[in-house]
Figure 1 (cartoon, helix red, strand yellow):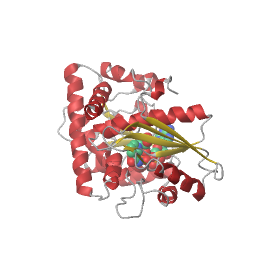
Figure 2: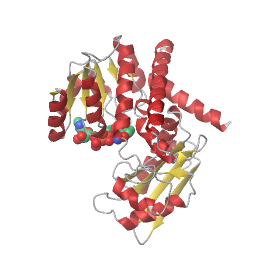
Figure 3: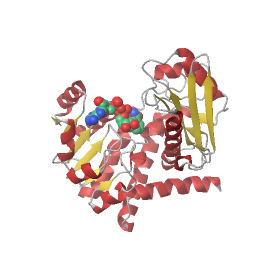
Figure 4: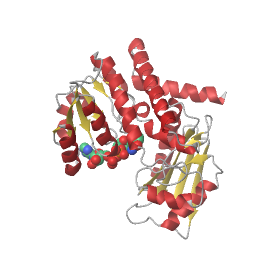
Length: 347
Ligand code: NAD
């Protein structure tokens, strides 16, 4: 593990096994320089333990940067449970996972991620208080998607202002990929702001609902890259910005909530050369973790959450401006800023 690229100077990595429930979990703590490590728990049927470890390390490092860029008093961590979320879940398994988290005495805070629901987290919370993203409880705030979407909407505004030289989104054509939890709310905000929407999803029912509400034009999933649009807003999958899609995109800006949008780090520079302004994903989609941070504080406050989203939007604007003035990829500038904040906390 220490020799792999994914290791990336993690502070500690913990492996848990519970014979009775079959729990196999990894909790990776990348950094606690800014505060206790926070990041969701993913349940996934990895091909082997190496793949599970790689995913835990990669995701946990990413959380350090996301939390730092959102200026939260939180470090980066992530948990993965190795198993099939359709067949291997049980209350006992999540209780055992709760005990694993509790054994770290608050160095890691968990929440739900892919394959794990708020219901699962209820069993976790029976064993530990170091868990957020619950539906009920003193400081629970439920689904973070509306706040994530608010941040994405404000990020689209900030990016469009710079890329299109517009004052607002009235009449701006925006191609939205994915109208699920985040994308659906993003479409609501955009429609209210007068944007013209082109949407796609593999879920026909969601498409119909969003189209009826917002007047959006529906296109087939693969046609979204060819849409005549000003902005592309990915809110579904990762790795969708690659050489193939870049060759097809006609937009001047990319701004959306999906995680890990760039297929490779080099795509940041390729986007810049293509004249496409890119809102780095881990900056624009930080609203959800801001919401979680407020829960972790023990005193959930929506005004605080909204003011942090506002600050995050300003940070995004500064990143985009620096990228333009220094003729460098915005993704690189964002990463540098996050790393500098962590290094400053260390020293
Ligand atoms: P979701 O599952 O509710 O929505 C994703 C949508 O994408 C679904 O409607 C799905 O049908 C659609 N989709 C899947 N494959 C597609 C394809 N090939 N083409 C078009 N659409 C497709 O998930 P979500 O919570 O809305 O999250 C969306 C993205 O935002 C993910 O990348 C997630 O990691 C990221 N994100 C979410 C949050 C949050 O608060 N929920 C926070 C930060 C980042």
